Length: 266
Image (cartoon, rainbow, N blue to C red):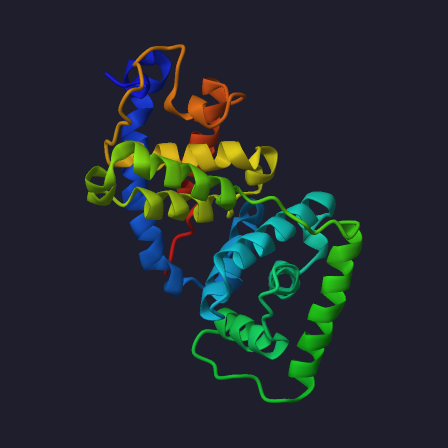
């Protein structure tokens, strides 16, 4: 048995690891049906979902969207959420993230996409009072976010660590076995989804990358060769030396919990 199967206190969780793939597919089916105006803040989940939906429509780069989500979570960690329009902050973090990651997102496009996502079926805003008010609000909110975060907007993302680990694992497994299961794509999807939860701020990016890869490996039943099945060694120890197994499972559970926060669609 693998480490996950043999660790007694964790063995009953493996069904949850497998079932998370179905939850992920269900999330993708629901995303275009959400009425954000009927949703609550949900601990930051709702504005993060808004960021990713708008960002994908804007064809933003994955790191730009991840940056926007992290900036949003950091902002709401410092303030009372009830004092702010979470969708305005979400749109503003997208605008700011585009600058931070040199992936400029035009403010007019952000305004139109954000407005259409909140009011599904509506066309682009006419150039008028509503448009200019929203534009001014986004610009002012961007300045507020910068001040609240003390202008510390650089982020070390898990993505670069994940890329390094996955490239090493491809050679470790061999091309045929690597191509037999979409480990890289699935791990990247888990990582994106974890950005919906503010708890991503609590963990080292290297550890987050490992946890998302572990979930992908478990979902497809892939085992890495030449790793002993014992309680003193884990496959990821070749990449990180400071990740304890309890911490590893804690992060994996946090990723899986994201799917339980999915709002119901009408």
